[in-house]
Length: 302
Image (cartoon, rainbow, N blue to C red; front, side):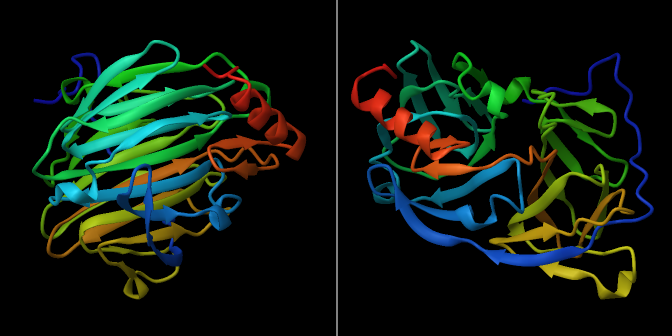
């Protein structure tokens, strides 16, 4: 069961008159992480500046337990936030700040690593489908060493609405059609939507012109029409990310699916700060990365 539109919130149509086109299509890279978990890395390091403030997007999905059973044993993070959205399955989170929670079907785990912590994410199932996504959201320079923070958002707490055309939208972060998401961030202003399009349906979503944005299709196929010519709409197939162009005149995006589709629509305000990453640490300068490694080795993230 999911949260309906709150009584004090009315559904509002999004008006998009100058939609963004697809700038490029990206195919995710198959890889493993943790203790041999098979996943697809969709947003890779070479796209971090282009899709600032987002650092990484991993997609995972398998009904073969050998692909996920090892999970993600203890590992450190510093300097960013992780947003894990579980479509199906059960994963237990524990961290060195004393937080513990169960991420399960339709739920979200939002963790601010800040100055650093060590955590684990381990499956609580030995069979069946495990499917979901992990998004890394950067922190501004003056927040990279903030106190760690953690929130479990159960499926029943996640705002959801359905448009008159039958499009179901789950609002993880930001604002869509007048419905505020489960989380908000002032500096990066992330928009994170899980969109379910029935056959023949479209969704218009306003996005500020200065924000970077992309769609990732995980069921079916969508088309994205730009401002110039709707007939030149770009098809974004399953397993592909469509990076949306940055046009000063654009006011949003319109996605359509002839046969039905499910996708993530993600956008955010860029920080325009240096990005220096070394594995699980993301800072602004090399010296800060060296300090992060030293702190981890000395046990100062525990």
